[in-house]
Image (cartoon, rainbow, N blue to C red; front, side, top):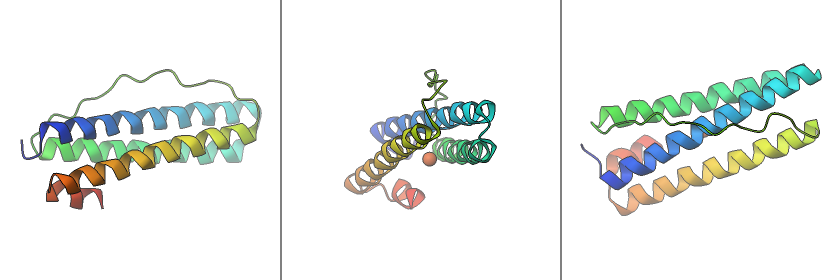
Length: 122
Ligand SMILES: [Fe+2]
């Protein structure tokens, strides 16, 4: 393994955040679709695909550095929402959490002088 055990764990945690985020977006998209907000549904399904893409990148990276990517179980996301506005608030909060986690990973790579992970995260 060409990265530390701690870094592999942190990246696996990130995989889990991206997966939860993708799943939450699918749930929001589904709620929008059945509530008649077709444009928003398309937007959230696209967001889900993006988060899924981030997750796959992390999986490929871990496997590429001979660490093991762990595919996580995901908690059931909320299935209904008070309003269209609340779905966007939920999405924004989720986005902020995942982004902060990425910044923490960058900090960790810097501290560990892990150039491989650092440049991967750029
Ligand atoms: Fe993401």
